[in-house]
Length: 329
Ligand SMILES: Nc1nc2c(c(=O)[nH]1)N[C@H]1C(S)=C(S)[C@@H](COP(=O)(O)O)O[C@H]1N2
Ligand SMILES: [Mo]
Image (tube, rainbow, N blue to C red; front, side):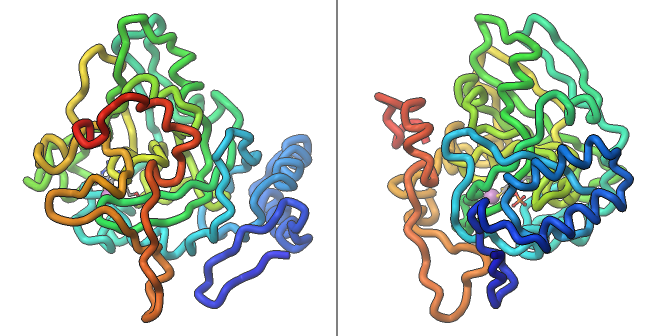
């Protein structure tokens, strides 16, 4: 059954342990949203394979099947929804961890388009509704690890970014992917402030972007993304520090040159392009050897030892074979 822990976090049950209550609640929510009968039975199938926590019940449900991608579902305890949605980094809405939840209500997530362009055979601008339907929505439970030393375990919903990239047919000369996010002064109070260059941009090598674990995410905890978590579409790159996971993406550009990235532009000596989670490569001003799991910060909570590639070495280590990770940090 679903075990609810004292701090309101959820453990992650076996698929065989899904409670009838969770099924019932989910069904009720689909019905309330007027999902067609055919879609409903599909959704219940999907649910039978899904992770079994109770969705927060705050936003539109986003049905998803549990991902079969290797390494995509960790069995660790899921971070409480409240923590995952009130302790955020989204500098367009302020630099304090509590600011995005307070300020991101102004973000308008419809209409929304994502332009995919650059070194591709079929450049195309997707409406967000088209993008949602490009591939089946999968649920994955990934760790997110911030360079500031905190981590969370979140049930994300989305599909491999590779699905989108394949649809636009990358040219042989494409080597990198740049992600450009919304910078709208009218709805984002800190765009224009001097903390970062706007828009916030990020980048991956093309093979990293094509790796099945790289997720184009539209939701979490069974629902669409809350604004403060990067609605309506963001990246989740689970083996890299959190800042690589660009939020509220509006443009994706395939290039032959390593793109600049928000934190690298603002502090070149502190943030590199790769930013793979690595306990042996310290940030110039602090160690990266341990992390604090959000929700575990009681008096006796121990810090966790950070794992190379955030624990995803078996899946992604090959991408960096022969590379000096101290040099390419
Ligand atoms: N557009 C944009 N994306 C962003 C950021 C930002 O300030 N702006 N912050 C990054 C950082 S530093 C982290 S740790 C993660 C945090 O994601 P979360 O709030 O969903 O946990 O988002 C990343 N994506
Ligand atoms: Mo971060």
